Image (cartoon, rainbow, N blue to C red; front, side, top):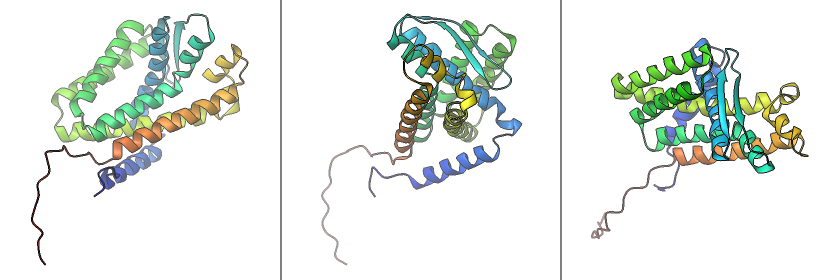
Length: 241
């Protein structure tokens, strides 16, 4: 077998989970996961703001699946480009990290534990409204409890669905926000267009291409067969048949 080949069972499972995500897209069952993906988007903005030397005042989620990150960004084209771009591209990067951790490294309890810590930190430092704080506390506690007490098989199944759904949501987010003209006029692309000479549609194309490339590269990495460790070469005599 080609050690760089795609793992067929993983590929089939990914396709199945993506299909399930599309089928149940409007179901209340996946509503918390949609909010989780929105929190990932806003976390991307927050992390980028801190990395360029700015600060974050608050991060908020709304029941209609929208979100907001209010931050103080240093003046300058680079800083603003990085922060405004970090939402959609950041969502794709988070989705890829979840996919690779889940499919390639099988980091079951670690992934849920890290998600618990992430939501706890966002709630503690940046949630300023009851809805956002309640989401961080309830979902973070659920992840923490799952990491501690769920059977290994259940943890693995939950991780797979969260990782796959996050990837799906990042694609849907790009489609709905950047390729709907009415919504794009109020999106991060328009905010960046307001402070640059680059039109919003150009930012939409750029973010879509970059995010798509990140997702495809991450999916390919997650689905590849693991390479066995090199334990030396053993010479065997030919077998006559």
